[in-house]
Length: 276
Image 1 (cartoon, helix red, strand yellow):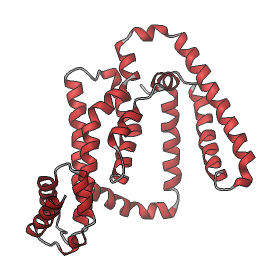
Image 2: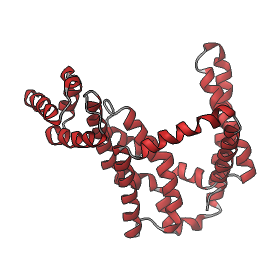
Image 3: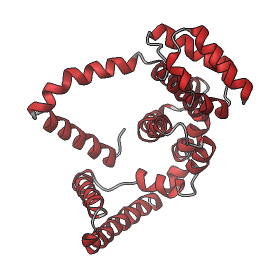
Image 4: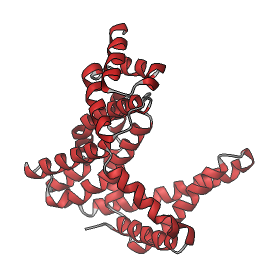
């Protein structure tokens, strides 16, 4: 069951989608969006990433790590926390430090944040506050670009603080009146879902970083067929493994643009590996 805040988010998301579809330009772009999504669905990295997520999900459920009451929270965590992490690693795979990223995810604020998100305002209050928060966030982002709006930014930050205090007060008041929740196992599973999720998906983030590096090397070659690209990923793995130094060295190799066959790729990778 969705809590009032989640219900409000869903309602506003539906309203946004309906509004977007009412715009002619958006409707006309739907076929190209669907085509892009279909291309994404058959991308090797997408297949591997989501296969891993599904495998972890069913393994946790099979071994009773994931109870029925927590499934909703875990799915929300996947979309609101895991996928943003995957996006971050995919876009910053060269400089991203996965170990540091994982450590950053273990915050002492997990417990108070869980209470704030679990014990919310009424559905009507959440429906009013969510667009206000979005508006304030947009205004702050705009004010950041010009020093003339420094005072406006301070005022908006004060408004955010007031709303934050309201959230905190209501949350801890709700928690104090529902202390019996703390005697239930699913209460702690929900609270530490971030930690459980990060630990179980850490291998995926490591793998994803190297898969992106492998693909970056392939993009620099003249290997275009999907079947050959998959074989090329295997060859890069066999030659470079998880050696980031060698992979980054290969990315700078201008000879990659002359590679057309698996044999050419293997020779160039072997030469770079020996030099490194």
